[in-house]
Length: 102
Image 1 (cartoon, rainbow, N blue to C red):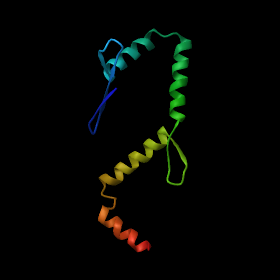
Image 2 (spheres, helix red, strand yellow):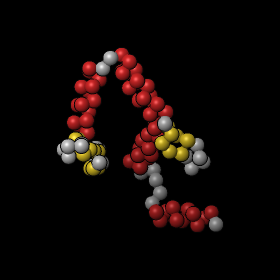
Image 3 (spheres, one colour):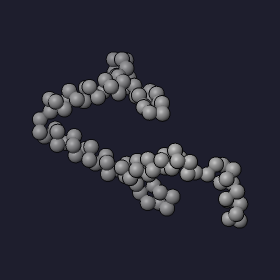
Image 4 (cartoon, rainbow, N blue to C red):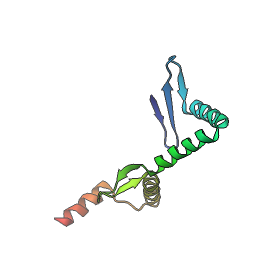
């Protein structure tokens, strides 16, 4: 698997058994095809799998509280908004703040 990343997108390439590369776009097209051809039983299985993934623990807070993917994403989005608004401490400001604790 290869990973190519930019600020707005991530492209994954997977090496198939026949040594050809599949991009995420190729994979999405193939999955769409499978879904279009799927019967009710397979669709329900795929849906259940996707719902389970939403409930999976992907991170923990500093207090140890487990976070699901959607909770973690929400926290990251809120953090990005704070950064964009200039609501953060620089490294030097943080060091000064820590020294006050001593």
